[in-house]
Image (cartoon, rainbow, N blue to C red):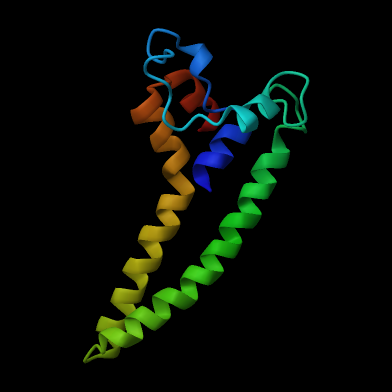
Length: 126
């Protein structure tokens, strides 16, 4: 879901770095049928003030839904672990939820910083 969202928001643009992404070595996360929607003049135009927010809102809805589902899964998994104390149970549950939710929240920043190495777009996000 995150990769699809990054395409819709216009983060994944192989044309912006033709020396790194070529026909022989295509971008592994690029989905042209989605990223074209973020180009200028299209429905999710990344340069528009309000149209660029549509994929963000869709992403937030997906993440909230996934977090609700994962919350239930994490609780069940933690129950199955059969911890001896309530404190161990709570700590295990917190760890599971933190790792999943932190990944969802910050993966776009890590993608820009460490994979794309695009400090300019990273600064815009911060």
